[in-house]
Length: 318
Image (tube, rainbow, N blue to C red; front, side, top):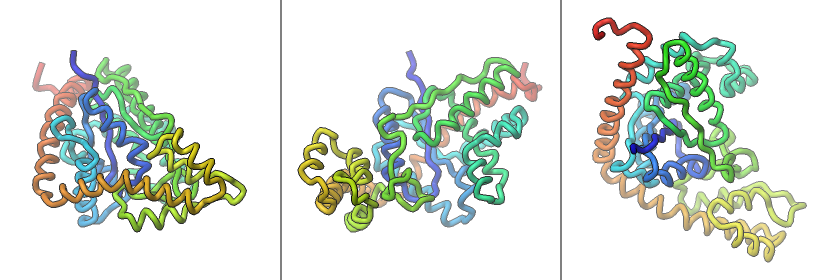
């Protein structure tokens, strides 16, 4: 019996933070032997945010190095770049033709941009359908995501169902996978950890940066146990151990922050060093990405042949 399929990815829009890791990436690594896994670099999605050639190229390489350092073994995971598989955008156009504007206007990214009175580009509006294509081309059974991405998987399911109803059974309906304990990872200010809030702890931060960020965590002077410190701390240490530490040091914020600094350094340091090793041979890393793209392209193209037949544009083969 063949394994079920897992698919997920990250936009190359900057350095990953511990929220990215505990909210999604850790699941990819933990499930590596259980699923046939596809993990991609969402560079076309990133065009909504980055329109600079050098920055985009640099970020793509950085995400690739991040993936390898975090334990995504290319012998077990197909790592690829979205732009290396052109049918992602072809399928998106087909989905455009069966999706209404009012439906997409319910998407969180669109509503957020609208609420901020931003001039909204078509890429932001259409973002969920490109993500639906990313997922559905590979017959993904599960998509590990953080809480904020759940809606996108639901849109992919709706889109698959609508296509199936219109043209015949073609796509399976994917399921999101969220680790409830870390559905939302808190940032240094107590809000959701997000680059847009500037409250992140980089996943490969140097020791001095970890110190600065943790000592700057917002605390409430009325609390014996600083909630924001504790919520981050429990990501890297068991709550049974933390209970004793925080009770013994109730109100001693400096000591608790210093303990968190040391525990985060223990977690981050091996990842940081592993990434530096991969960085020494970038051509080798890029060859992994290229081969992954070739494999993903073959699989996606086979699915696309089925789609073209279903919609009636393939008139050459009967």
